[in-house]
Image 1 (tube, helix red, strand yellow):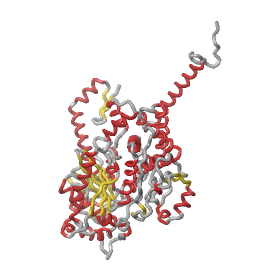
Image 2 (cartoon, helix red, strand yellow):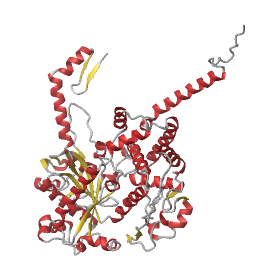
Image 3 (cartoon, one colour):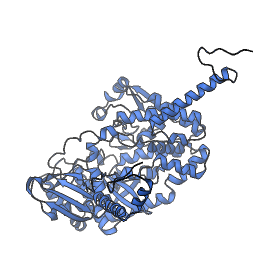
Length: 591
C-alpha cells in the first residue's frame, strides 16, 4: 500500500509511516505555507499587456475602485511588463476576475488573469462567488437525514425553515437598502429611491440569494413611461473624452454640486454605472460594509455588482438604474404567488428552484466554459471592460425563466388565465409595454407531489426547439405561428426577439425570450433530470430525497438496471409458483 502526500511530494509505503508523516513538523509547516499561498493567490490579480508606460499610483487608483489595495508589484521591463495587485479582501479580487477580461488603465487595455502562486507544483484554482455560495444536494440530504423528517410535507417544511429568507433577513436587507439610499441621495438634486426587487421581495429567495436593487428617481415613478425615451448619448459630446467625464463626475465635485435626473439620464449607460460604482466606493470607505464592487456595463441591464455583509453572512448585490420593467416582472410572480390562497404555488416554485439549484441547472455549461474566450473589448472602453459574462455567456437556466415555466404549466391546467386577460386596457407603460394588471384569488387543490410530477412531465414533453411557450397567451406556439402573430406584426419584437433552443416569451416585455441563453447542455440536463425525477416520484411519492441524488447519471443508470433485473427476477419467480425460473433447456423434475 502506498500513500502520496501532494503537499510535501513524498511517497510512503505503510499506514504507520503515513500517520507519522501527517503528524510531522515539516508536513504541518508545508500545509500552512500552502494555505498562505492560496490565500495570497485568491486576493490577487495578474495584469499584463501594458503597451504604454504607467505608474504605480495610477494603477493603485484604478484598482482602488474595486476594493482596498494592499500592495502593487510592477515589472516595467519592456514588452514583458506585468503587474500584480494584492487586495486586502479576497472578495475584491474574485469579483474582478469573474466580471472582467480587460480593463482600461490609462492608455492601456490591460488583460486581467488569476494570479498563480506556485507551491511546489500544487495546482490551484479560483472559485467564483456563485460557486462559493451555491446550495448543493449533499448539504440538503445531510440536513434532511439529520432532521428526521420522513414525509414530503415535513421535509419541505424543514427546508423552508432552514433555507428561505425569513422576515428578519428580509427586513435586514431593507435596512441596508435604506442606508445605501441615505448615503447616495446627497450626490443628486432629484429625489430618488433605492428599491428592493427580485427574490428578496417575492419571498421566493434563499438565504444566499442575491439582493437586487434598483435606483429610480421619484419623477420616474410619476411618469414611468417617459424615462426610457430620454436619449442617452453613445459617446461624449463636444469632443470631450471619457477622462474628462471622470474628472467632472468625481464624488467630491458631486457632493458640492449634485447632479440632477435629466443630466444623469443623458449620460451614456456606461458612465451611469461607472458613476454609481464610484459612489459605492465612497460608501465602502465610510461604512466598511461593502467589498468587491465592480461595474458591469455590458449586461442586458447594466449594474454595479458588490458584496455586503449582513448577519455575518456575505450577500451578493446588484444595483441597476431605472430598471422599472425588471421590477414589474418580479412583481408579477410575487402577485401570482400571493393570489394563490393555499400557499401551494409558493411552495411549488420554492421547491422547484431549490431542486434546480441543487442539480446544477443554474450553473454554466461546463463544455462552453472550456471554449476559447470571445473577442476582446473595443479600444476606448475605460475603467470598464468586456465583462466575463460576455466572454462566457450565461448558458444556463435562470430563476425567472423557471418561475414562468411553472406559470405556463398551471395555465395548461386552467389554474392561471393567460396574462393578456389580466392586463388593464388603460395600463401605464414602461418602455412601451403595459405593466398594470388585475388578479383574482385562486386555490390549488392538488397535493404538492402530484403537482411536481405534473410539472416535470410538462417540462419533458413541451420544451422543444420548435415551440414558443407564451404565458401571455397561456399556450404554446409553433415557430411559424409565433412569427406571424408577433415577430412580423411588431417592429420591436422583430428587432429584439431571439429564437433559441428554448423559447419562453416574457409576458410583459413581449420582445424578450427569457430563455434565449439556455445552452444545449443545460437543456439536456433539465430533460434527463426531470425524466428521472418522474420515476423517483412514482417510486417514492412521499419522499423527495431521491430527487436530490441526480448529479451522477452513470450511478443512476446502474441503479436503474439493477432495479429492472431485480423486478424481472421477481416476476419470473412469481410466474413459476414461487420457484426460481429454470434455465433454458432445463427439464422439470418429476416424481
